[in-house]
Length: 354
Figure: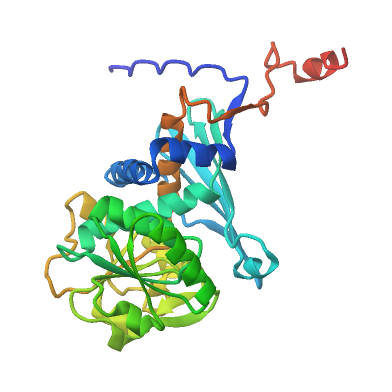
């Protein structure tokens, strides 16, 4: 019997690099937001192409009338990652973010954390990168215009990602809150987009080849009705992300070819919670590996029913960890007990009195 070569012992870490919100923003700006999104999409695609290598489970969720708190774990043979994230739609009225998050990347070999990072900004970036990456496989060829229904915190990130990966520069914006649309218009015009602000969702969809829906309210909603969806459209549905929260009329789902991240999670939280448990869907990783078809017909309606999955967060943490060396955009965090003798934790405590 041939024995595998022993794995090299991982280096002993006294401190864990911590990426604060301020340092995450500095890292993004130093790379450039669209370059960051493009490179991050590359990491996500690489990990989706090795999907079978990962431990996978639906996220562990604690639901309340006010929102949800979730833990999103996954691991491959080398690293373990998780994200803590909340979703509280009413937070905005009190001046708080709807979504906040942090994440950890650790070594499987010894269990030591390699990185602790804010993930509020990073989640917005990875969600946008995943949306645009999916659209590369699913959107109609030559798409040039995207409708964005729901102009909150995710809006600008989505726009930048779709321009970076697909060249989309024309946007049609609509939100039930005109202030949100005004905010998005101000930010996106500053980034060089051609903007049309619309008075209704119906108006926003006119002339668009891609429609992104991203609303915050935790309810069964009908942001898109069946008559608004014509042949050849690609729908990027990212607002429905928990039980009891959807954005699309059920009839749209019945006319669409539906693509998902992880069916076991999406059937609980996504648009397809409206459908029978055996309704056919295609896993996006299979399209990326050439094991399933994406868009195959110019008249096909494609729907990316995205709820976010832990492997995307793993990819984002892996990307940040790879980009950090030499930047100075991390602080050493003293969170690992490191006694001279691993068995003498109490002795380390006693010596601290000195």
